[in-house]
Length: 176
Image (tube, rainbow, N blue to C red; front, side, top):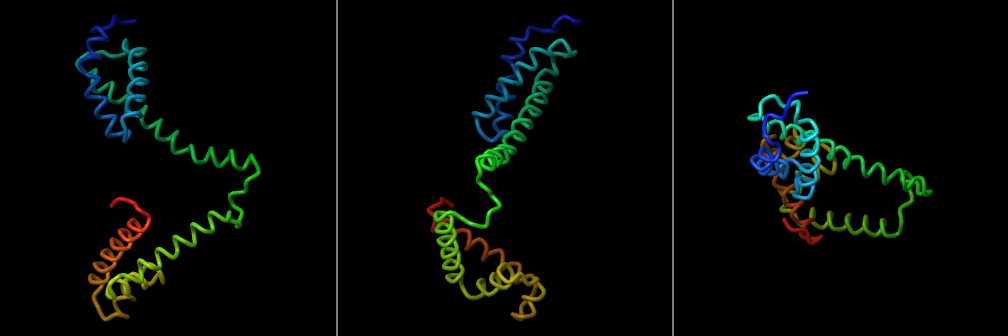
């Protein structure tokens, strides 16, 4: 086993902040980045004897941290499935067509909100939005029906979707 090329503490002090900033960007929040960095530092400490060039420490630590963050994200992605399995084990059937009264009320409110927002769209946008997103027609079909170009259909649809999104967000008190 090789001797440690440089004191781990020295390398740590020199490079941990740069790797931490990378992890904040990759993990999406400071708490996860701190957890990832702590776990990565432990892994790096255990494997420091495998590092041949101490000048590569920052890159090496960043690779360990990226892999750790990836594992964390995969684990978080599985969490809803695990909760679903818990609900199933408790006798709740998520595939049941019956919704709770709260779910039914929420769905009705959401549907009414969306219908109101669509109805409030300016006519050129509403016509395109209803034909493309509600009826499912192709851009060519909508263009032919309205006597406009496909490019105009795409432009109006894009603007209509933005307006619908903004209207729904405003109705539910979401910040834009």
